[in-house]
Image 1 (tube, protein in one colour):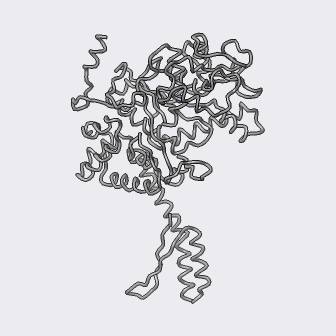
Image 2: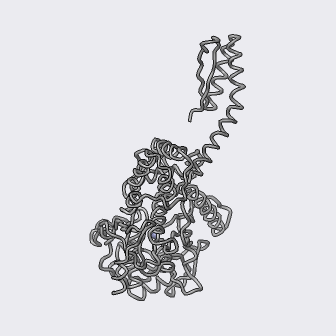
Image 3: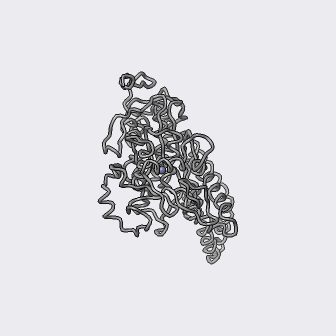
Length: 488
Ligand SMILES: [Zn+2]
């Protein structure tokens, strides 16, 4: 205890010898409080990663970007080598199985699954690299933590412990978590078991003791991915989703760690169930001290869904020519706990702001000694990126390129994707001009000989290419001149 108190008094200093006070909002306590890690030499954070069966959409990008900024801040506050960040890859899931069967009907299911997960994982890494996201310390795949040869925690070992401790039971080749065995189940999402049971309208499987009991392990049909089952169950099977994160977090961060993050939609049931599994298996009062959740993302004022046709993937936005940094900046203009409305207008504004800053002067984005205290304070206030960005506007207005560059670099911007996009746009313009200009000359010729059918035909042809024309008379020569532009 004495050692803990000693640590608490030892304030961290930044490069200017300033005391640091990081405050984070905790979903578990519904309060913003000063953050004190369990061990300052090893600050530990877990964030739920993607299920790899499809392109990541822009809503998936939000926690990846938000917790990347937190990772950078923690490394700044506690030292680069003193932060461990785990973001998993879920590569075993019924959605993956369904996608594999649909896309590769002629392959054995397990081969098809490997094709889907490998391609999707590669795409995910390319997408988020373009968003300026640092690799986490560990990026475990769920299938590596079902069973292992070493002594690390696994899904199977966790499940067996839960059954032994009376928190889970075997029924019809399934293992289920017995929520009634945990007195404060529902604390994170702030609901009582009675409320949840009353609200459970889904048909309850006959082998469940209680309607809210959830699957830790289930049998696999022949041909489906399968591993030897725990608890003496003869039929091979596979894990439920929630147990994956408990096992990976336990194996890499230990029974209790500092921060657990994810999207707000994961609070219930996923995070509630992670907590139930980990705490009951480890006999600890918490799984993580601080639970952080980013808000929802809407597109042009509507919930994103495939049926509405407004499902936007990171890949599409990048392919459309939006620089990754513009996507990242657009995300950070809204505080992470607020809902965000993702609009084209917002992206255009973000691009304008960011391009303006990077064209102002050659910015040194590596200069950490030029970091402004007010900028860091904004981030330390529960990751208040809008306030931090307001500071950036201030530096730009004062033409303080040093502070602007340092702050941009801190947030993960170096201007590289902006420059690349500008070059690409110039190349496109050049190749368009190469095709367009002969057509414009031909059209002017046609007009001179009053062949209006031909000149209209050429105008339509250009319109199909997305080129709009503007004719005007040269005041000195009296000649008709045509200018053109590409309609975005
Ligand atoms: Zn998770």
